[in-house]
Image (cartoon, rainbow, N blue to C red; front, side, top):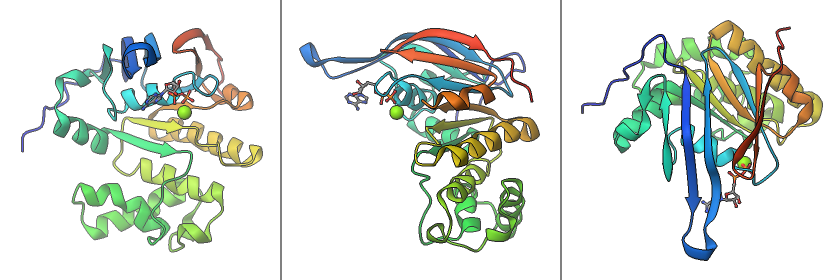
Length: 242
Ligand SMILES: Nc1ncnc2c1ncn2[C@@H]1O[C@H](COP(=O)(O)OP(=O)(O)O)[C@@H](O)[C@H]1O
Ligand SMILES: [Mg+2]
C-alpha cells in the first residue's frame, strides 16, 4: 500500500489552518461551527484552545486531527496538506504522527496500563518486546512506573489520563491533540495533567493543542487561542515558561 509521504520541511509550522470552515446540515438548519479560522502553531508549543461549550473547539480539533474534513479552507500538518490525502493517507497520518487524548480517557478496560500504551504500537506492528520496553519508559515518564500492570478500573481518573498521555506518545508523534483532557477531573488533578503536558512538550519536543474551558489552566500554555461562535476572537501569548 502506498501512502503519500509527508513532505515535511523544517520551516513548515506543525499546524497551519487557513480560512477553515465547517458547517453541519443544510438550509435553514445549517450550523456554522467554524466560520473562517486561520492560525498556525509552531513546533514544540503548547497551545490552549478556549471557548464556551458550542464555540467550535471539538470541531476544530477534529479537523486538525484528520478525523473530519472541512467545508472550506485548508489545513496542513507539518507541511502536509490534509486535503491531498485519501482516507488511507489520513488514517496513516493519525496513527503515526498524531496522538489523541480525550476527556473520557478512552482506555481499554480489559488491558493493563502497559498494554493500553502498547496499542498504537501494535497497530504499527512493533514487536511485543519493543512495545513492552517503550510502554514502561513512557509510564515512567508520566509518573506511573509502578502501575504498569494495573487495569484502568484500578486507577484513579488522573492516573488513567496519565496512561492516555503515555499512549498518545507511543508512536513518537509530532502533535498531540487533547480535547478537554481535564474535564472529568477535579481542579487539582486537572492542573497536574496540564503540568504533565507542559513537561512533555519540553522533554519530548512534541507540539500540543489542548481544548479547555478552565481559565486557571491557560497560564501553563505558551499561547491561548479563543474561539467564539466559530471565530477566533483573540490570540494572546502568555509568555509562560516556568
Ligand atoms: N456532527 C454535528 N452535527 C451537527 N452539529 C454539530 C456537529 N458537531 C458539532 N456541531 C455543532 O457545532 C457547534 C460547535 O460544536 P463543538 O465543536 O462541539 O463545540 P465545543 O467543542 O466548543 O463545545 C455547536 O453548535 C454544535 O452543536
Ligand atoms: Mg467540545
